[in-house]
Image (cartoon, rainbow, N blue to C red):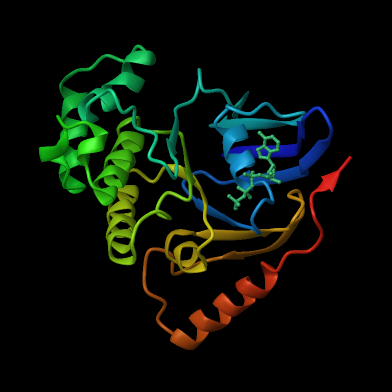
Length: 257
Ligand SMILES: Nc1ncnc2c1ncn2[C@@H]1O[C@H](COP(=O)(O)OP(=O)(O)OP(=O)(O)O)[C@@H](O)[C@H]1O
């Protein structure tokens, strides 16, 4: 489980300070897919960066709790997988080299089991023939599938996804989302997904949060019993969609202090 407690983040420039996240508290249960929806600029990517430990928090704490053992979330201790919007693959390394690098950085032994896991994941995402290509030699959909594979090969304790499918056309996006779900079902990592798409939230999220303009304020949340499936009742689907759209309407701007 990941616990975000009273976290605040402010960006400071020469002329101003912008408080983006204000006293945010969140609990992400083990094995859930938490989707965060919120108006543009409310701080979703900032939160993902804080969880990925690439943005320092100003106050509060982010902890990882496993079997009653509570530790500060750390990329040195915990495996944090990231699927960003721009794929995040290093352009000067082949797809396979991109997969091996995070394991080498963590000093993990690359043994038969690792090779089997890589093969299994790549097979289910249909990217075996692409393993020796460079990212620039792949289509947009292939790049995104390669990035999904990289995150799962790490066997992440926490999987972070920042608008991972937003650059894809509709058909490719649906295909990548289904492949993602198929592989997610096998590993069920604790997942946080940021998206602008209500349809994507309802397809991939077991719980959906709508944040206010100044993130810290959770405006609305629902559990989604149909995640990964089609809603059995279209009227119910449209009604939930309408509610989420209403809750997403922006309120006040980020506070300049
Ligand atoms: N490096 C930075 N320096 C100063 N302000 C920043 C910086 N990065 C982001 N911001 C500001 O912080 C706020 C939150 O940005 P963030 O990218 O987290 O929002 P978001 O909710 O992910 O937006 P979007 O949905 O449009 O991607 C925005 O007002 C943005 O202008």
